[in-house]
Image 1 (spheres, helix red, strand yellow):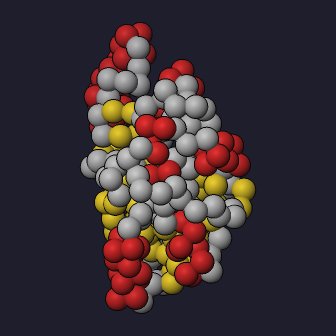
Image 2: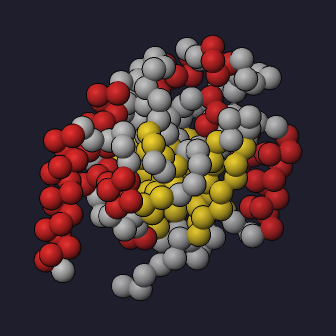
Length: 234
């Protein structure tokens, strides 16, 4: 089967510089990932881009529900009459906003309805399939969204370039996040491009080898040993 191309446009939005993504394939059907657009100008920029490129939004996918990732959900889901997919465990993030977040924004996001997404949930858009991977730890119901055919992963705040998401908010757990990273994300193909919720893109392989927050000393020694053996086999 022909390899299809996935197109990605990043919008860096709101006071917390959150990375929202618009993702589509050659059919023009698209999904929005973590639409954190807070201002009217930010929301209009997304709509203008969609119209200019004749895209057809099919769904909104949330990695988690901290307020900087959901400002635009209600507006965009209504504008395009599309479902929102979220882990129900994230309801707590919506209901109990951390004061550190609330103090940085003018108003809280509007409530929205959503479809249940858990580990293994898939959403079709055009000729593409995107799959949810459960990665709790930054928040109780954290998900990453993976397009396997194109080696693309949207990691939310679970994994950053050279770092990981904070775990001191309600529902967060460093141990749980490290388990998600070690036993889920770091088990994926090293060539996978990772698009995080803040900051630049990276790859699974780069983070596997250099991210100081994922492994303890014994993990790192085994990691380097495995990498040496892989290189030798090549």
